[in-house]
Length: 563
Image (cartoon, rainbow, N blue to C red):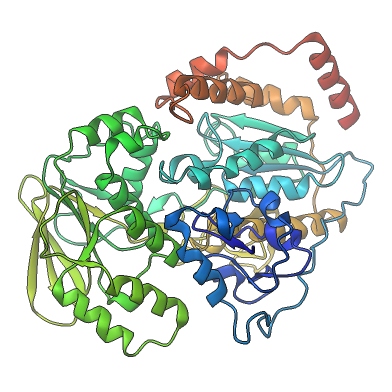
């Protein structure tokens, strides 16, 4: 009874290190790890010990006999990763080395203290790596009242298994030495210089918050937007609560066919009663109940072989939704199947070749995948009425009517105040996470990056674990070498400074109160009912019980030791 990795795989590699027989690949030390769409268990080598199940933070692993019907394709997918004869590991494989935690050398000035800006996966994995050492202090700053970044606001609500990684983050946040400073905007409330005055180093894990924009006529008028914005609206992000999402037309067009496009299309065509059992925002659920959308068209410039969505997401989509292709696109799939040799791409094409035809009458809202369509302009004067495309590489024009036009063509990093920025790559220039001054080629003292702002918008949730680990190892090496100056202010002064600048800062107790209140609001039917305004979050945080006398005395004692 071998175990199987399924769709919700986050690729953080925890299962690799837990496996006693090295049957999970690619491992973090192998070349394909950083770009792998998921990890795979060798069904012959697996000894059915279950260690990987316990290690997986998102519940993506199960015995092959306990899979749901829609998960059965992952049995073959796991086995297909391994070359014949079965059981032989890839040539580059070896027993995956467990990377040692960075050893912090004690210094007389006090413990290593690090500020982490951002609270998404890269930030939390970095905090976890730092806190493997006793005495280290980590202060996590987040501009929103709630933590965890895109896991909270960017993962589709029907992917609750993926959101389970927040349980790991909750455990990290409870580690000794960890503190939250939520609802604090670094760059406005406190500056980079402020943080350096109170820490040995500042590590930015702020992601890539901007969408890449499609530069065609008509984008920006009413009825247009981005898929990322709609996902945030669906998830109840407080900055997108009032996003105008018009679902009064029978068709929506999404330009770009990555996983986010699939997420939006799936939500827009899913039965609202099924979504009512998730943590979808109330305003989105109300809108979906009155939606007139019967078709979502996902349009891509290139052919089927270059589809940007991952194979696991395609398997998940086709098992839950009505997905079709027009006849011309079926022909493109067959053409690509005749020439493509890459196994992963062939698997995608084989699934696409079995999809229904768009000419068949629809019995429920459906998704249509369309290929070789290059957008040229958004139709409509006062608001969007559709999109005009050219068939890629030709002058043939095609028009698709729609009441909502969304783009999903990637993310882009945003410049950070007081740090250099590579506008072309949209990342902070760095060497292994050390921020580099392009003018001098030298490292910027005490400044580090991890996650998408470091490497660009690539990889998956778990990819940030190895990315953050690299940065933390270099940060600790710099600390041990004496390259990081000691803070000029005492630890207690940081809290005083932040509260003077941002009186409504939220700490770990405040976040716990928000979390508990949302879960209670969800009742037995939903995992949580989210607050969608900052005011409501602040009110819930204010209800957190005041620390006991014992807790206050303990904190004062720790503060004295840190001095």
